[in-house]
Image (tube, rainbow, N blue to C red; front, side):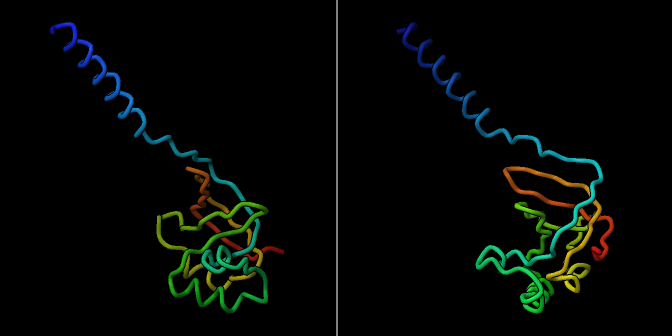
Length: 125
C-alpha cells in the first residue's frame, strides 16, 4: 500500500507542477522609443470591413471620438495606441483619422498584439 501511495503522490506533484508552468505568462516584448509612420484607424471599422483612407475619415473620427479603440496601421501591423502616461489616445488622434501620421513612442508586443505608447505625434508629409 505504501508504494502505491508514493506513486500516486509523485504523479500529483508532477501533474501539479505542469499546471503551474502552463499558466505562467510570457514576458511582454518592450522596445525603447521608436518612430512609426502609418494611418490613424478606428479599430472596429477596420477589422469589421477593412475601412481605411480619406473616404472613411469622417466615420473613423466619430468612432474614435466615441471611445472605440484607435490604432496606427503600419504595413501589415496594427498598433493599438495609447499615450505615454497610459491615457487613451482618442482625443489626440481623432482629428487625424484616416490620415498618415508619424508617431514616436515605446512599442510593446504580447500574444501577437502590438501597442505604441505615443509620446509625440505629427502629420506625416
